[in-house]
Image (cartoon, helix red, strand yellow):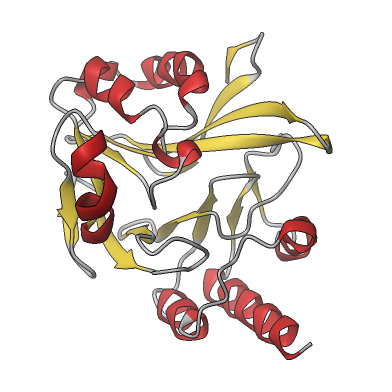
Length: 246
């Protein structure tokens, strides 16, 4: 469903009750364009994961409103403190007066509780938050792919992994959900401006995520992906390890 023809913003359900909101954008020096995705979990306590940059707020707001009343939002979550993750956080808090920022404890301590207009609901590593029919588990992933405060969410019933900047793909993200290879395109996109921190614990963090056996990967940039998520995450870990050896 296209929700704004001028911007190209569109909404598609990628797992039961989980919607991908995608907006293509033009970026200097990126000939194929780029894209920003947010994920909306529709439930008794709806959760929006990623806000997008502040300038995209009108388009994302319009898209959320096509799925549920915006004022019903209960949580506005994100992986780490960065403009495409939470640039429009305060705009969302103004639009949904019962909503809380949702992030990890480090992000709340170092950034969010100072910048946000309401205190954060800070999740501990491994903590599960019930949304109604859905629940999400928070994983601290420091420096994976980047940011001391980084963390990611797994929706437990559908095994949907809200994987942030992992598996970032360039282009417009025109395909909402794919079963085709995304590791090759994401590694090719990463190569010229490597944005992974390559911290010593990267391999063990990725293995911990793989052990959760995700079925759908909800990428912040590019197509969402469906398949053997454990195998794909382990393939990413192998690619990063091979790169480190060279």
